[in-house]
Image (tube, rainbow, N blue to C red; front, top):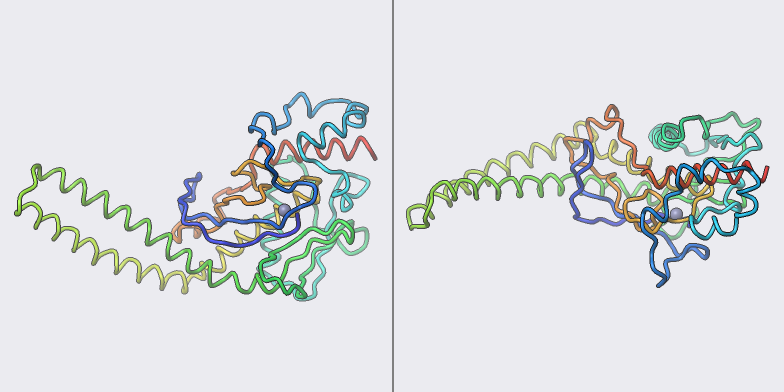
Length: 311
Ligand SMILES: [Zn+2]
């Protein structure tokens, strides 16, 4: 439940605005939601319906056990929710950077936007119900962040955080390189098709065309590498990546276990589009990008109804 592990996948992602590669996140086994051989539910089976989100408090109390197993929502995770139904997060300033705060604010905004209300709030120390802090004790550099329900702490582990920058930077470059390669192949094919039948003459022409595009791409890639450094796009990418990591952990704090659906932010081994094409990462602050899916959001609404029913 508590770990997000960074790994790189060279799978292309096509989102509303982002066409970069995906960052695969995996989690350590969770005793309550470990992936087993049981058949995974479909999206329909796993997404609480609108009707289910509007039942009586008594209904949620009576059917809690059934709802918990079908939708993987857990009261025990909800220790950070205050009586008024809000998660009021105090940011422990020790070691917290501006970029970390940016990621936390992104994560909070993703949920609040989708839940339609300020369910998660950044709070003064006084009256807080949960704490955000930087942890640096982990010896396992694969733990990105975690929600600890016992101490009501959302922790970001410093070691993997610092380490992530170079891999994100590399991924931005690789994504762009892949994109250029694909474009090249498409252009070469179009050109080759336009020439008609294959003769030694057309083969030579196609090769010359390919060579010139290859040279252009080399220059483009070199320019992109410089821009990534100049515009600090690796930092921007990390802010987004950790925005999704923390949104995942806040999902746990809201009461959600892992989702079996690959696209969900609450998936334990989810592909998520946090590593972007270097051209698109520039647009991210204004793109309206939000990694939460309908299933993530409906489950969180159900979890909050359950919370209210028991408080
Ligand atoms: Zn998790």
